[in-house]
Amino acid sequence: MPLSWALVFLPWAGALLLALLRQERPAALANIAVSAASFVLSLALLAHPGGNQGWTHIDALNTPLVLLSFLIGLTTAVFSLGAIGAERFDAPRLRAYHVAFQVFMGAQALALLADNLGIMWVAIEMATLASVLIVAVHGTPAAIEAAWKLFILCGVGIALALFGTIILYLAAQPFVGHGDNGLSWAVLYTIAERCDPGLLNLAFVFLLVGYGTKAGLVPMHSWLPDAEAEGPIAISAVLSGLLLNAALHAVIRAKAIVGAHPETVAPGPFLIAFGLASLLLAAFALWRRRDARRFFAWSSIEHMGLAALAFGLGGPVANLAGLLHMLGHSLAKSAVFFAVGHAAQLKGSQKIADIGGLTATNPGLGWGLALGIAAVAGFPPFSLFASEFLVLTDAAATRWWLIAPLGLGLLTAAAAKIRTMQALCLGDATPEAEDAPPLWTDRTTLGPVWLHLLLALLLGLALPAPLSALLAAAARIPG
View 1 (spheres, rainbow, N blue to C red):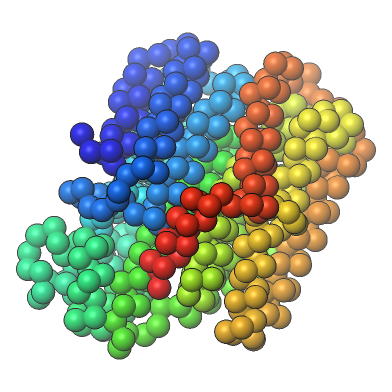
View 2 (cartoon, rainbow, N blue to C red):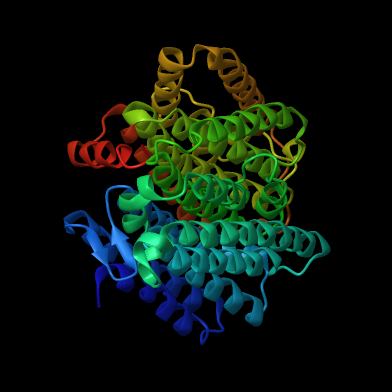
């Protein structure tokens, strides 16, 4: 079996195994084993020569995103070992949670590795449906409402993306005829300059709005805060760190195809507009949030907006900044969701006012959360500072008028995050819940938190030479 398909079917085979396990701890350990095997297998991508394998394609753009996905999948599974008990799932809900998680991981890999637009569309829809199930698994009115909003809004988005996919296929049909070639990213890129520019423009609009909905871009963002605030704690890290990246990856691929035709409307300004709107709206919305998980969900909207803006600027520097931002955001934000989720379990509430003084009562957790918030606020030496600096310098060189709104959005968001960090970590200590998780769960929580922070620090301080070369090659793909 080709490596790309093995990475898809291994989690799905794990889902079948997990469907048979009814007890909490054996299921959590099996979930970790499947996730660890998937991550180890994904490391083989680093030695893979790349290229097409049927309906899949391995290149410099999707390789780091797949590796990141399986790394976060593994750390999320480890986090769930300690956190799942506080969720109080019965046996059917426990099995639904673990099965949906591994189905999501397989679909996430397929969405990133697919060379066929139709297969990628199906994979992202599978990941969305698995996310809906996980968000709704508690069965509370708030969870059902959040899952329903995720299903409806992202369902509309995926329908628009399907329409864009059909139009792109029609644009290619005169040159490749009927069959799979008209849905291949690689083939479409080579024939894009001969396609009808009007059809390419129309396809990009539908693909941008459709997949932009799943990427959390304004104004198609309203499902994201509810889904990340009401679902199980682990789903927050998965949604912000993985699903958003897969959707934005699809938009980047579409931009490369449309941008290859000299007579199409430049796709960059559309991404800049959506990205800037997302950044500014989220930056000011952060000041009105009182729920900790909802607060950081809005931060995800801000960061995906900034990544979209970077790809809208285009060119090697801005594209590199966008890729680095996606990687750094996934690592830092998942660390924050792990930490704030565990803090909410300890305090019995996820309201910011009910969580305080963590550095005094739980130093490892408190300082991990403080550093995580500093990382997502764009403070040096973490990788988000490096990517934001690259975006600002490239904007100053090519579109000077972006400096003022960019600076306003980044500073406003950073100030809101520092205020929240002071309240959560450095404020007066609040009492813990009577049914707080046992102390042993701190190990399974703090391990993923500090590992992600360490990796985000390394990305900001010193990119390893092989990863730097891989990202430089990836930055040439979007155009």
